[in-house]
Length: 318
Length: 215
Image (cartoon, rainbow over all chains, first blue to last red; front, side):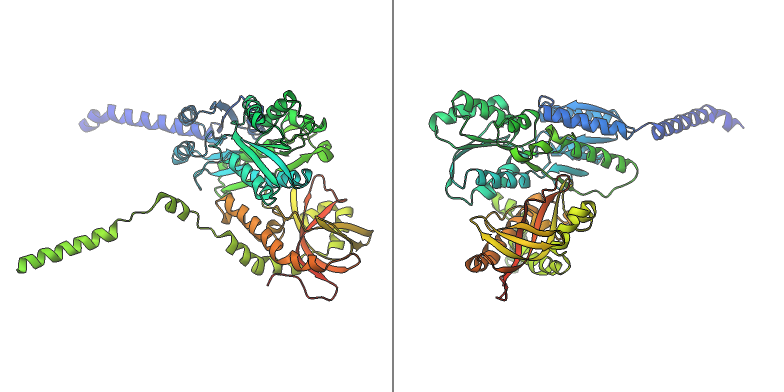
């Protein structure tokens, strides 16, 4: 009895503590799951649309979500991951800033049991992310390359404007395009330069290239923003009528420009499909599914004047 | 003397262990070593062991074209294949037809269907894309962690067609020939353009002449 009296306060504390833990556990079981949507940049409308679609799908599935903007900065992205994990987000729908630089963030999240579903951009580590849902940029640019060769009738001089050199999409697009175009010896690439997927930079880059190469026949750009910048440079140089511009993305202004005959073609990506698939995979993960394709390609469709009526910007349903 | 011999032996053992424990390699070689996938070899095996056997169960082109008109949903669900999510689907077909013209980039062929004569293009110049890789549905995406391996398979399969299927066919084919063909075609499920069906050939033969297929 004396012993019980001595240890009574300790026993009460222990029971109280256990009760608290029980409450906390029950609370976490009952708490709705949350998805963090970490996006490389919200300065580009294409990524804004991707984030909005992921958020809409998460909501539709009954989950709370929050969008984090990495501003194309991997250290900011790391902060977002740390915050998301600390704040109890249960899954991360992720659009990486850098294929190599973002690996560590993905690994840190999955190491603590937070699944990561990459959207549109990949990380260069097989198996690091739970699943990567990506546009099949290579194949999309094979289709663009084929149309490019047909349109130029297998000969001419052209310029290639690349995206960010640290992004896999840049090279997948470039390699897909060249896998076709390089088979035609009379198609000569007179300049290849990066403009970081940026419209203004692309305009400046092409203006400068046109000083040295004034008689080009076409420009292939790694995204639509750069295609619009290239077109502006051609307008300023008085060459927009005969230099053919090709883009990639399916952005709003390029869809309109194809209708108007200013841009020849683009590769339509489907951010809706990627965002919805990522959110659906996260939902399935919460429900116990653990088998996901490591990479899930999303088909890219060639959009040109004769089929533009079928398409709206970003692959939206009409 | 005995002690010296023991030290010598000991040193030899240490040298042997040390030599076999440390390797120096160029970083380029190590990087290349991680990418050991041989697309050409895979494509050659896939061609002979999976793709050409799958042609035996591919639908007749005339039947497929009729079904695409009457019941596109069933045509896509029964015969359409793809490794990607989205609207692009690929089909394997076998068919017969009459050559209407031999052009720079394609051979135009008329195929008899229930609904009448259907004109198709047999691609002879632009042999690109994933149609041949995906149409049989025999490749599982989960077997590949690296998308560049899958791209390499498409490129190598297309190269087999350029090198081994087309040359002998193109050397002989002319307007009016009756031909038998097997091939792969791509269609957009949401907006199928049935007026312009292009087939990437896998097997071609003219009349009774020997089949132009890879050895």
